[in-house]
Amino acid sequence: MTGVETAPGRRSVAVFVLALVAVMAAIIFMGRLSRRPARPAPAAAPMAVAEPPSVAPVAEPTAAPAPAAAPAAPATDADQSRISTQQQFQITRVVRDGRPGLEACYQRALVRDASLVHGNLNVRVAVAPSGRVAHVNITGPAAFRALNPCLEAAVSHWTFPSAAAPYETKFPLQLRVSE
Image (cartoon, helix red, strand yellow):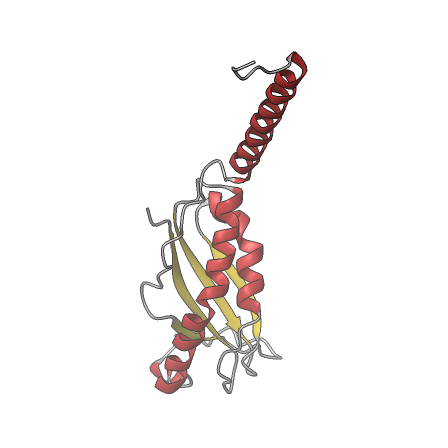
């Protein structure tokens, strides 16, 4: 016997081993494909606060009603002076520093609903004299209402500068997806 001859049993073992290796490679390949996301979630653009927050004092409730003959006095610059320029700067800083929490809400909402690519919201915050958030009101497109609980919870943890009286601040919130 000069040539290499293989027994019929040895050939079937070799074919079996090659088939087993091919099946294992296919399983590994399919496993890696299944771990990849079908479509990557769109990245959110940095949210912008288009203008600095505006601040207005809240009228304090009175114990007795005003006399019928006296007209209600409009808000004057003296009322606005209760909130100093320094406090307005601090309010702007609180809003700026709180943006990561708002962005996290937006990212979670994008995972659930990729159609939330563009929205302009208005956030109004009532602040107690201690600086604690008393109430948060968010208005905007109906599609973005699902974000309201998360955004309200995030804003309610912010601490604003204290003041002699309660006040309100409001700011626009622009939500965008960067492509």
